[in-house]
Image 1 (tube, helix red, strand yellow):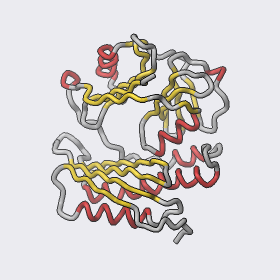
Image 2 (cartoon, helix red, strand yellow):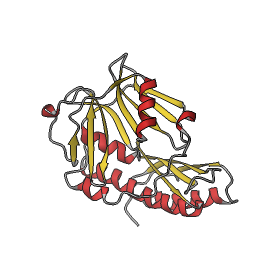
Image 3 (cartoon, one colour):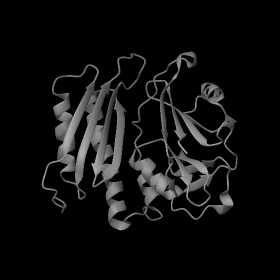
Length: 267
């Protein structure tokens, strides 16, 4: 048992079920996650779990499990895929352990900062291989079904990496704090990150704790139609581009349902 600040209450754990799952699945997931978060050092204020079984025989691992957590005011997320939901819940528990460790180290050692050099390499070595696959929709049937627009956070690549990893995202769209450039950070390999910018300025970037490489190529200037064509042709998980009307950095990405999502800045 760890020494944990007393919050005075058990965290709220909500479970959403999508698809055909055995009776009792929701309660098993709830009790598994609740037993875990009650043993954490940092107080977990709420948890939302989503369990989905995709009705598609072409999907190798149709059972998806996702958890969104409020850890003492900081958001964290975990998601996995497996052949059965029982396996998915077990993998989700392992993933949450890693995410809670990330947040706990961040809050304990560098309040308001990021883990020290070397910590990212250790955490990256524990990255799971049980990520969900995209549904194999033909390119001509893919549509942009979700459009998110918000003011991009102004942060360093280190801060972007921490936010991306604790939310279990494949990329992070942000405005670089030093250069003022719209940027995207993503995992380039199991042990590193890569940064792309609308107008690359590697000479102005400060030192980073994360193992970082920087693309020297400016983001291609595209409209949404051409960005979609690029995605269809290359088969990449996302395309980072400068909108041909605004010049701002946008991301078109593959959703797990096989369609596309679009992220654009509001300012």
